[in-house]
Every structure is written in structure tokens, then in C-alpha cells.
Length: 55
Image (cartoon, rainbow, N blue to C red; front, side, top):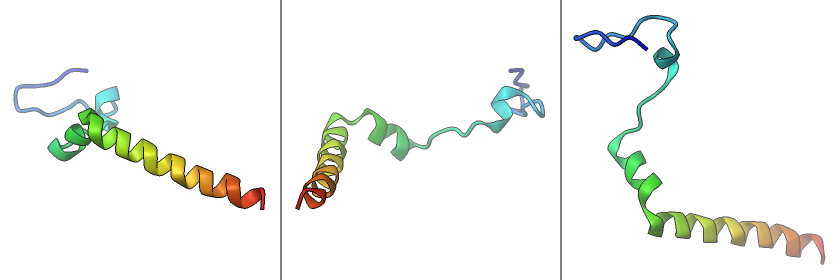
């Protein structure tokens, strides 16, 4: 990927189609507490589906 001084990216380069995450996104990706919380919520949702299917 060739980046010029004024931060223009060459068209149709691999880097031209990627987005750069913002500060909030980087925080949530790195936060262990947030990841544990989301893991717990996801597991509760899955267990509701599994338990509901066995009733």
C-alpha cells in the first residue's frame, strides 16, 4: 500500500477499502471486562434457545 505525504491512498489498493476503527471500537476490542460481559450475554441467549427447544 503506497501512502503519500498528504495521506491519499492509491485507488484500488488493498488499503483503499479498509476502515480504521475509532477510539471507542479499539477500547471495546481490548477491554477484557467488556469481552467477558458480551461472552456471558451471548451464552445466556444461546441457553435460552437450547432450553426452549427441549421443552
